[in-house]
Length: 449
Ligand code: FCB
Image (cartoon, helix red, strand yellow):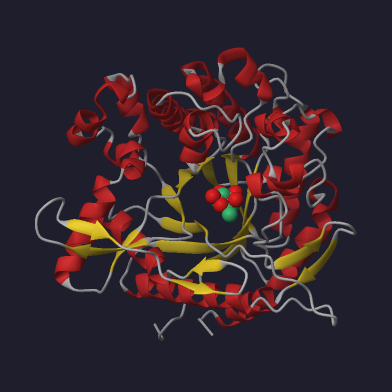
């Protein structure tokens, strides 16, 4: 393979999430999600913005699909809104919600774009929060499995590859312990660990339910964002120290490691003591259900060096460049070393980069162009990391840029833009940015330009 090139079946995609782009929160029978309620609480979101309209994608999806074609995407990662399918979180199915995604998926397929849906990208139905305490309860893990079976049962005649959940920590520890994500609670550290376990369990139950309900074989996975480290330079001692850093991370020990290994490591449980989650052996077997693929999100990573004594390693500041407005972390090697670490843990597992990109607040020129050279550079360097991983025979199946469109960036509202395509929120006009044009050329050439 020529340097920095991609095999013919490598997928070039972009990613979004339902809550961040769809808008139409009250339309066609959709119920409230915990994020709708969170957004209504003053002070939670920058400038008290909300996602009631967002990119109006629920109505404008045909236009957005045309943009995907224009960019030449071969895959698209999106999420299905649980409260659109089950407004009450469980029970009565909202046929209009299912019909929307059926229609959308059919159109993607017709355009030759492989759908990569995620079943829940943080937008838990509020009814399940009110009724059971959300992810604090294993009832909700079971409700997620019912929902996964329902949706996969319906769409598996046309969709093969599925992710259960996206970035578990943001729905659990950050939501129930740190208070920064919906529902915004600041409960104990143990609750943080328990909600994490319950969501990890929901993933396992969801995989089993989806496989049982599918009309034909499906590829089940999840999307995680491991805590990422990379060697300060690539000598044996710093690489060995990097592996230690990955496996000492609470973040990795609480989610990806148990999902891959089917157990919590003894040193993790010992370190957690009374804060460890309650779990059973049976649950761990379910959690360890073999995956068909794994999606990895990566935005940053810390450099690591070997040091004598102590833990044997330490982490250093993330290099950044100053754009005059924001300090942008500039860590393209992070993505490569994340792939190396996961591949080392699970050598057979097919991988995909399911999110990677750059958030900033670039403007538009008087000529109507968006010259997001920083984002374009981040894209280029990360694609080089993908090509390097492929050259080393890591089974990387695709790369999804975050994001197709500027969108509602959770607590940051609309102040941070991640899109390959700019959205003017006043007019809903879309403008392909420099980074989008660059990505289209890369896709066409199938090599890093
Ligand atoms: C990830 C989220 C995604 C988006 C990006 C910028 O953590 O999965 O929804 O907000 O960050």
